[in-house]
Image 1 (cartoon, helix red, strand yellow):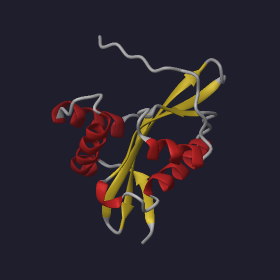
Image 2: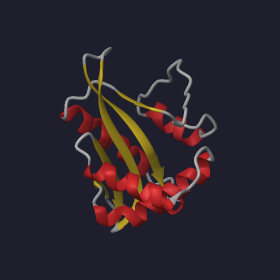
Image 3: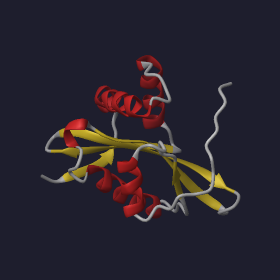
Length: 148
């Protein structure tokens, strides 16, 4: 079966919430709050500076990823931050994560982004391996956050 990656639509939100719940259960860094996350997904889908993509395999949405664009003073142009990369339990190992990364890179190049970056859970060996396989390199940065 062909893996089709496309922009998410509002009708995809319920399935995307299930995928997000799976991702958050793997990471354990953020709690699931369906109402907040439903609002967040809707905002991204409707945004002009962010995109959510879903992966379809035989009529079933089984993966998603998000791309946010911003201006980098270092790059002197637009760059992208990739978030919420997840494949459902049932579809793991079928190449969906790789297909989404290939799609993101092509799409990002077409819209003029000069760099992509992402954060991954340090214990997520399969994801780290996939990113390295696709030419991503680890930086020296350490992630921090602060709620306001």
